[in-house]
Length: 452
Ligand code: GLY
Ligand code: MN
Ligand code: MN
Image (cartoon, rainbow, N blue to C red; front, side):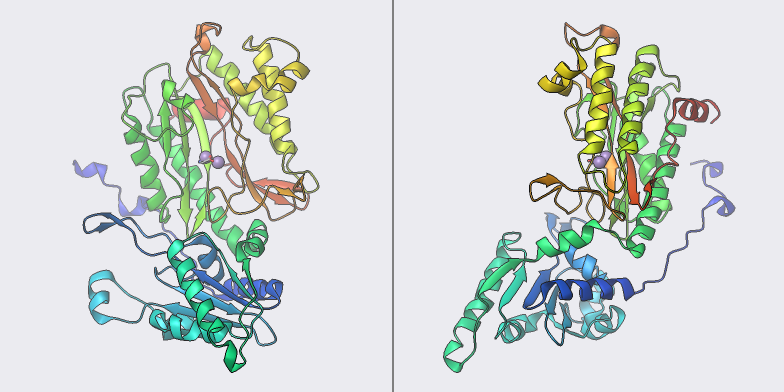
């Protein structure tokens, strides 16, 4: 490596990392306890998973557990006891000097209780003794039944232990309720702390997309563009991508779940990048599509402008009082008319909408909730109707157009795959596009690639 390839220290961005503040996490626990009303909630996080021989997959905490604790270690359980004296109790790994020499710092129960503002904390091996006692004389257990067979079996064991005590006058919980039903509703509306984190993630991902555009030119391979994205993610302080980055050039852009591979970006082709980073557990999710050589061709331009117009229509339908499906309906209407205008479909707009003929070129939904999970928690319908949008919800808006070669399609359109995706926060008077800094207009993209 030549020395001039190493950035001068002055060029390395200084990243401010906010200090951990347990207040919002405690507020979420208090709200969940209020919604439970009674009973005991048991919410485990995950364990490390072996990848091959001695190497593990990078550990990622369970989103529900993290939402309520901020605690990122594996092998821990949060127990919430609702009622007149609500309690938040953590069970976690013990301090262990030997393990800490190999694997790094562990909080242990005492430091965890203080740092994460819990009422009590114990080591994980106390679960079998403490849980049956906490469940005795409670009406319900709140738990994610069916998510993890091993935890299901342990829960059954604790319930049976309480049932075994009934002759001593103890009553066992009658109901096992799904705690996700309560948590999903809470997670749909992001609090200020969550939004601050999501804005950090969005800003880093915007920079990553701009960097990828500046880097791309004929001859580079998809994985080299992915490397540019990953560089910006980590340089900005993101812990990881929020999902496997899609870097798809030419015909690959028409494969919806394509992953960055080794194809060479060719002069005259498009490059579709769907990539977003995760910061402190929160996802961003951006797609940009641009010409490898920096100049859209005629058919590429037509299709890009169509998808952009569909996205604008979807954004216009993203506001409080509109329902979940309105942005999708708006995007589909614009795309369907565009496919007719471009000669890709025949017939009337009503006919194309009615027959869903547009789905040949636009076969996915226009968005999903976004938060701790890239496809975040929360139902899309309530009581059989599409859910109304309310301030604090975050959703993606991601229309696209994917034209596979076929005899009845003008060859100039073959293999054009375009998606444009942004992350929208619903606000009191409309929406805020969290990812608007990723270059998107034809003029902005062409200018950035021309002037790099
Ligand atoms: N990147 C996943 C999605 O757009 O849904
Ligand atoms: Mn998405
Ligand atoms: Mn995406």
